[in-house]
Length: 439
Image (cartoon, rainbow, N blue to C red; front, top):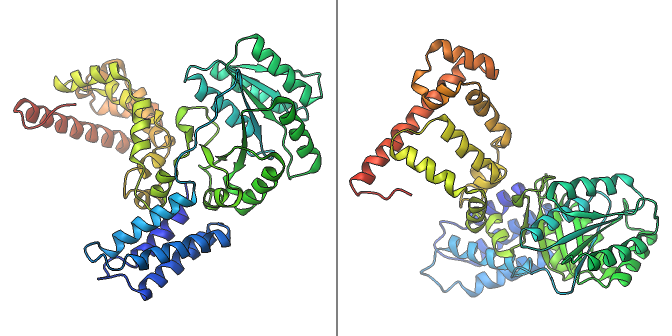
């Protein structure tokens, strides 16, 4: 996400790297480039000017710190100011009330329905008994979509297909939630292609009828500055509690994320990526971490969290034992591959490692990258997967044909696998000699 913004801001900051000291001249040039990068990313011009003015003032105030390299100091200042711009601290969702009522708002196509299901899944994993309510009476497909998503995550969906009164449906859903001991009611509402009076009146009436503890505005990050204008229009009428940035895995320039907090003075509470309901496709918004990613400093905290979510302790103990006995095979390899895939988009994961965002920006890395490897392993017999050494030329040709790849791909996989086994064997030797600890 934010590839263009990341590249341009890092290029701007690098212009001051290697200088002996911070001066008005080199700061002015850096600030000009940062401001241009922000505006090109669709950040509101006034917001971009305000934040770069603060960066400039802060940089000039610190010019006496001769023990700190100018480049490092500028990165620190930009990081701090971007963090403040996006809200400073993460904002928790309000789960008071019995049940807690969460009202979703936003334009049609913003990702409200998908995020409603993601949020339901997120809260369910926290032990909440969640009810989803389908209040889009204009698009039958929206009701059906919510039902399908609810079934996928095991969450009940309340809908009244013959009722065309969304306020009444919402009230009935609340009564159903109370009668069935639900902790949380998430209300998915109708949207339009643009802000109009009818939609605003309808969602205002739903809010008055439910008195929700939390009203969230879901905005499509790819709409750029229009996202900020829409957020302001909704906030003027609904006074919502927080923002959800959706479709952050798309070709977004990042301006909405950096501008919304400053324009509507409401916190960004969640990020949403993709259509899948996996845990890594939704996250609590952390301004400091997002600032770090924009400055190519990575997001190690989120990386570790994803690793923990994907980690299968028993399976890893088994594989560790295989490695210690030098018996690591293709069954173990594909098991590890599946755990990596559960962490999410591989390019996004690598970008969380400090300094890697720039290196992977032009690389074609996604789940599809693993498909040929999985196909080759799945084309092996159980004996071949367990004992790769038996794979001779005739077996290689059969594997290549069965997986739809060229023979050299099979040869390369086997070569890399043997190199990996040698490395693991060496690690075992070092561990046995006490030179290193095995995980």
